[in-house]
Length: 455
Ligand code: GDP
Ligand code: GDP
Image (tube, rainbow, N blue to C red; front, side, top):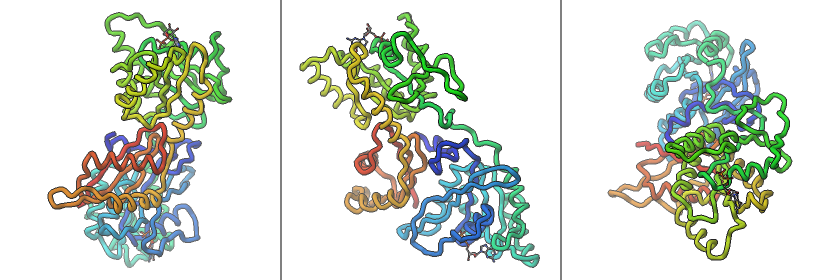
């Protein structure tokens, strides 16, 4: 997945609450000691200091909920991690970069008593590149006498510097007014999550694998569809189906039930239907006809689900037609053609006889859990540290690229950003992914790992 896909995280991604409507996110960015934590405490109206004095403490980006003039937003303090493997400037820049990417607006804090340093300049470059609305806070303006220093910060080209004393509260009202003007009312939705609603399932697979048979089996032949839930908008092509004691939303079932005539272009429409169902779904159940040789179309549909970043379950249907010989070949086909989705839970079912239908829901739930797994930065870096020590990257051209540290930038699916001292070969990246999966699971979910090279 491209890095661009990491932009526009919603509030729930940062703290994993997942039940509230996403709030707009403000990232507080600045080099160490300019007063970010003090300012954050001031804004959230908390007296007790979360100001971190201990150097060498690894902590995650911390997010808080705040309110100003009746508007709620999320505040993300991007300071914090100290890893001695990396120069402080690169560290700060890397953290800020992640914070900026996931934010809707940026509050850039400068120590007015010090003025702009090289590190500040480097941060400004990052902010410009991200193109997010930015408010400039000239902090530590405790009194009138330091206000002139704040004015110098006009030269940074970030617009009006707001003189503030985070310590005493001076100027923070005007600053917050400017922040509210910069923040969008609601963050852009990455995809339509109906918080707390039924989980969305796309049942996909090439024609004749048994999609409509399976749907009829799980929904009941007489197509008894569960009652509409209050407050859920229902697309007429989707069906709410009760399975394993829960209600699930099966996406675009009309397209499954409608018999598509095999005329020219049918494949094209089937593929369109698949991608639009994936677009709306959280998890894909890919149906494969186990009684036939895996077709190129099967692997293509699986790849579509992976590329869409959805949780994936593979259901081998028509298991009633399985015999020893076919089973032998099927195992070989899976090893050969489905290596890229070894992580997907497999269920062997029969829509005809109802075999193992009860295994479908646990598989879907496992995949969704993997899809939403978040690893803390501390755990991830402990793991990466051991991995790099035990299995360093091969030396190339006299140089040995190292993973310096990493962070999980998002979930649904899990996305990781690794900062490295040089280019990491594809083979090594695959190795890292394999080890990540061994260590943390991620059953049923694609994961993306992007690498950023720090000189
Ligand atoms: P951070 O590293 O950017 O989060 O900075 P901190 O919030 O930890 O603040 C660094 C130091 O600056 C602390 O000793 C704060 O008490 C001090 N500080 C923060 N804001 C102000 C301010 O408005 N005026 C003065 N005089 N000191 C401040
Ligand atoms: P779709 O095109 O993917 O919706 O597939 P259908 O549900 O229309 O099924 C295609 C054919 O496979 C039909 O003749 C079904 O009766 C048959 N079929 C579906 N599931 C099974 C199964 O589990 N076992 C067997 N033996 N046949 C099945």
